[in-house]
Amino acid sequence: AQKITQTQPGMFVQEKEAVTLDCTYDTSDPSYGLFWYKQPSSGEMIFLIYQGSYDQQNATEGRYSLNFQKARKSANLVISASQLGDSAMYFCAMREGKSSGDKLTFGTGTRLAVRP
Amino acid sequence: NAGVTQTPKFRILKIGQSMTLQCAQDMNHNYMYWYRQDPGMGLKLIYYSVGAGITDKGEVPNGYNVSRSTTEDFPLRLELAAPSQTSVYFCASSYAILYGYTFGSGTRLTVV
Image (cartoon, rainbow over the protein chains, first blue to last red):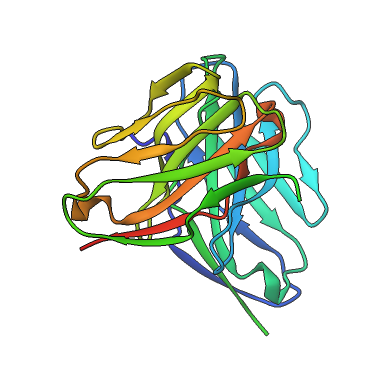
């Protein structure tokens, strides 16, 4: 079974509107962390936001927020007031438990295009 | 600037050739990783290291080798390159997972 599932291969959003990128995960470990990364066309990987499984509140970082629904095992990324520079590939990732190495498992990504 | 430095940025290899992808970080991070990203796909872990002298296999280690003799460096060796190893390779490091990985800019490798 996929550990991280991103069901939206591509999405469009109008500039200045909000957009939600979906991510569901699968783990039986009570301790885990969820991440979102942005990959612009230039190729670099940019860390956006982190949510720990024991965090009581949803994580926020500027225009990015993570809608964490633990019972549904979802960790959707919400981008508010979209900008043209938000056009990129977005990856959801998960770290499980306290195993050595803090390894991340990535989803297949969602390509977001922001329309002017 | 502090960060993760990967070299080379681009490389074309012929089938059967070997090469080493270099990765260096100057943040004193213990954890380092090598991922590959195939076109239109997410990242898959090749090898990782939790400190100098300690390495372990990830999800897709076949055809690769690593070493970690210092905290700073984590080279990835490709032996007998195959077309299936055509990919973009990312090196990353972390101090504590709460802050996410710091990624290098990637190496685009083509095997022909």
